[in-house]
Image 1: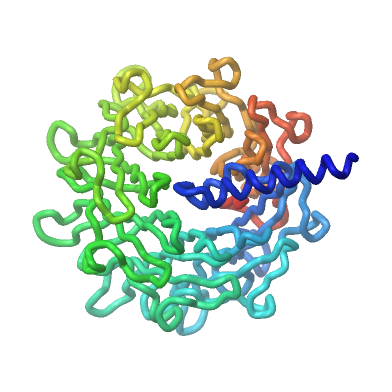
Image 2 (image 1 turned 135 degrees about the horizontal axis):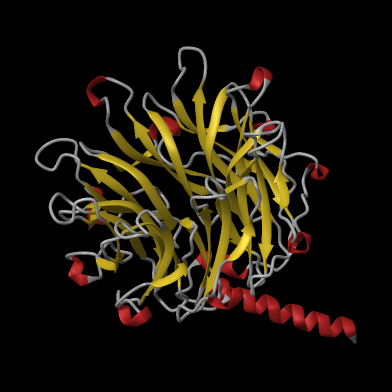
Length: 524
């Protein structure tokens, strides 16, 4: 009888999961927020050589962390190597392969020989046990390599176990010296390059007389990707002006908007638009959130946060496409946006706010605002943003994840003020409800994820599949024989903000060695 009940329960769960994954209008990545409770997280990071023959070397490694903080690969003794060689491997990005493993892409800069200083994009796949799958595990796969220098990869899933990788291309000399373009390549789960004729003929995302850089991307739900990026004029009366453009690539790498002849202008004005962030809109399009830098005159030095919505066919939907919607606009500096879906067709946007005048000048705090599907500000009648983390410490660099209930969880750095905490950096977090109410510590203060004499910084996080989050971060020792050494630690927070690992008394070491571990990227 018990087995029959279990079978029925399993059937119900499978049907519900299938509905989440395949019901019309749902985007594929929404399943991430309903990840299986107890599932592990894979963390990718850089390893910096600190002593002996490896000083100056940088490799890429990964660990697999269980729901209770245990390391699952190599008997928990060491990280799995993603790439290690005569190159400086850095800036890793990663996506799930859909089978418990990951695809990892990174810069690889030659350190010696005639190609010294040249940078390419390489990749590798790790299975669910941490085994390298491509090229017999003996070497990484070149993804983008040419006479130009390829840097700063961004990766999204192609929905078939592979990935689409977008990257910057830097001209190294000749008539194009100083130019920056954007290229893209699709890589199958087996490590095969699917677009063009391989790495030397990657598909173009944007190529012109402008500096195209700082890309962000999301899957388009049909095997392709939507890409947004900065475009800076290099000459003429607008030299130095930066705007936001976008393009959609289909599963074959074809540019879909404007007949592939040009990108779509998303944010362009007398202000300088920078640092775009993308969130799927659930209908095949995207929300584009970005910073706006004030031009000369009364707004000189000001920074605001704005947003625009773009349809799956490249149409701008807010303000008749004439201008972006203001998310946060004041005399303070609003910057470093992070955004998530609100589950109701809109978005929640977090950002830093630094006071420019008065007794709190220079202090940075975290604020938030919620926008509806049609671009209306919803919190505090749209007249002001909601304070998320405001204290004597300086709160910076928010990262956010939807909580699955219309709200969001945000993590951030906390920088110590003058006095005994000067120079210290901790990691904090807070949860906001769908109406903008702070839910942890009765809304009076943030949850402290990590606080010690060391420097805790650069948080990244994923859903724990049970309404909470797992937060990972760098920890740099400030004293003792290991001063300057950086390691990766983590902590899991329950839906109510309770810290679950080590009874909440301390964070768990995730990657520690004689090398310096930095730049964690979490994949679920």
